[in-house]
Length: 477
Image 1 (spheres, rainbow, N blue to C red):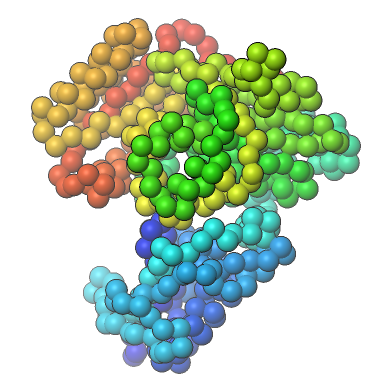
Image 2: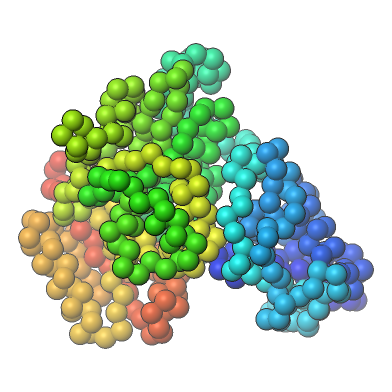
């Protein structure tokens, strides 16, 4: 009996990979380009490969994600050619699309198999994504999931009897109601990084992936949540654009410098510029009227500013100052500003986070200090260390922060929520508590890749306010 023939495709930067069992013996000698065209570009948009046991459900999701990292699409969502600059590698060497594939012997446990191992190198590829076609394609993969998410959010906001009317979106009032219901649902979801480090976690989620993550009980961070809302409202034909901003970023927004960083990935000496893309929101146009929406949370209040209120937030006043939103994320209160910007900047930023920056998961947790979970009640951050002295130094930093701010905290060299504050978190949000605990192994593996081997990790679980205070459940609809 011949060995199973497996095609494995791996994106070298994002780590996304998929393995597919091939039933055609001719694949062993097929040109690489023909193989990719058949099994990657033209992957069926249904579950027939899963039913045939040629791929797992997670593998099919990964394969569809790889499609959008390798191929351009048109406005209808049809995949066209390979992105300019993409190269394919086999056994670490450039592979020619017109030559037969290289087949290696391998094993899965004790089972022998033949492996066609293909790596996708996008180092020299550009920002050519067609976002209209991309969103159309992603909706078609899981339409029932997204339709259920939307309907459930609208019903929760306005009641089942009004759901169908709102979904018709045939008046400006109903369009605003739809936007508000979806924005509120996304705002209420966890502001979290823990799901990046689940066994099947993604280092950065696209809008559709974030919607599915929220539907499963988790959430995302601002750059993921804002894409989730735009992904959903794009489907209903609602006009919107991304806004960028951040703390102490009154303007003018340095768009050319941000573009330069996205082209060079040189972020040295750029902190004063990078604060302008530290946060993201959306500006809608409903019946010619602006509507500024911030549905990201992370202790940023829910914003739904119509007309003049939205315009004021995006322009300087008579005194030359730009209005801001006061935000206390953990211990410090900051002024957040919002800016309109040419859409290539946020779109390319999101594409870079998804597909080029190989440490985006760790940067969000540690350098951007978002931790694994942040709410108005709790902040959870890992404490990676190699030695007892290193742990004591980290512990001292957080003890000092908590003392100055008057916070209670569990600080442990172990990855545990067994302390009193951890117990409060588990009682208030058991899903987040479970997600934090499940993140341990993958986070330590990733941190060892980032900063060298032999790390351990504890947790700082910080209560941002007294347990007797009742949490705000979110915006009133």
